[in-house]
Image 1: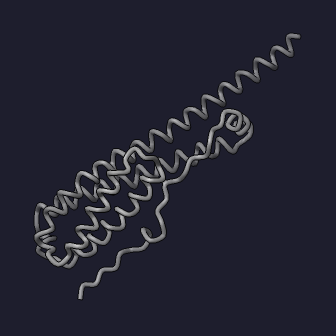
Image 2: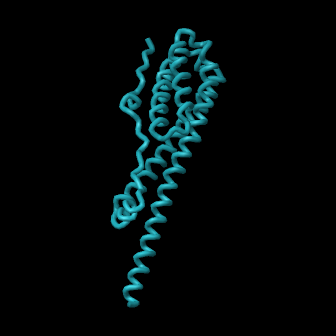
Image 3: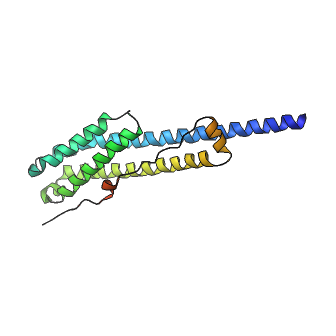
Length: 183
């Protein structure tokens, strides 16, 4: 009888430990997403300032500037609408910013402007922070997914409906380097 009670107690403690680990991993993934969200907000706040400063220099590139602002507005509009919407909007914004940066190379006066230089530095720093936050998020998702798939925690994960996390990926178009023609 004591052996049976001991086995039941050990099994219960094991299940509690595994469940708590899965909860910690789920919360870590949520926290990692919030860290990305903070950096994205920072980027969203910097973009209008950058566009305002460069618009006088880039009089022939107004359509590109409109695309950047439209992509930024779409990204801001999907805040709180979930991972999928945010990921899609941010991919569009990254693509629009890439085109803007490529075009800015054609304007030496613009590159020499201190305000533009400062804003580009801030935006570059923010992009690096976003990249690190995405890396941490994807590492957290991998750890959670490994726990969900590994025995014996997979039984607890199935029992309590823990789901795999989605990696923050960039689409194929965003992977391509913008082409700059300096002729």
